[in-house]
Image (cartoon, rainbow, N blue to C red):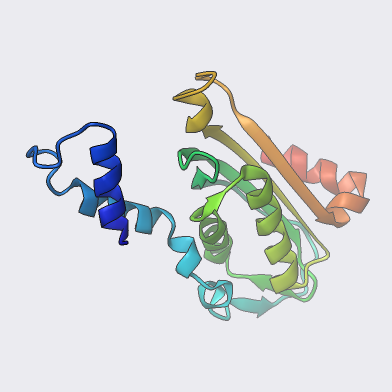
Length: 182
């Protein structure tokens, strides 16, 4: 079964007429959309980073904040949308700036829960850069909570993952938290 034929079955099962002009090409469009929204499964982190690691003597905190984030919850396949803040403490090398946002996208573009997404980003930053620590905070609104179920329109979920020095040093963690609030 193809994704397109699966969408045809779903649309028919909810009682719609696939021959209706507005729906004739919807299974194909929906199949293309879901493939785009889950393209993280086809991406390899090493290819995304593309050797953009550079020697550096800096050991000071690097922060990229307000990275737009679009993902889909694995429980209802509905979007969650928000922002991600990433920090790390370099140890001999830094990663290209755009690569941090690309790493966020690789993991976000998979069926996901926010808690795991936060941890996956932090772990790959540590693993690929050899950093002394990494911190990730994600703030997102979940359509599965806004459009169905409890229908709470203003709820925002916040998750964090602190690894290395961000976990062991209260001062490092506080500096990060302070800087992302600016």
